[in-house]
Length: 161
Image (tube, one colour):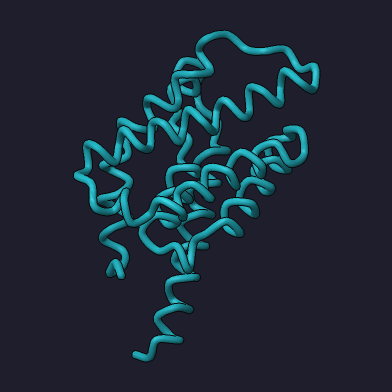
């Protein structure tokens, strides 16, 4: 298989897993469970931006964030900005992150998810939307907790470069 074919397969894999994560983010859940729902789309984009920054990068982060804005009915560009920022940091720090054990990666993912949520919270505040309760800060912690599972599942789908 040539390098060009591998890159095409990688791009299709990134798109397919991002679409699956987006659909899982939109699936209806009971209220108590939706409060604990990890941000799967952010985790998948972070994974691809860290493990294959040439294929999954800022563009995939912006595009997925824009899709999430449109499909959730959020303020247009809110998730796109937050996900682009977090993706940019993941791409810039991908060599450091890949060298860490999975527990330390989870801590770095926690910081990234908290930054993502902080940007969303700030945009909500600036735009006059009501700021939610302290429960909005739970998904970053559940996301960091499921990072080893996400990384393990996605790691089986490709051969890291």
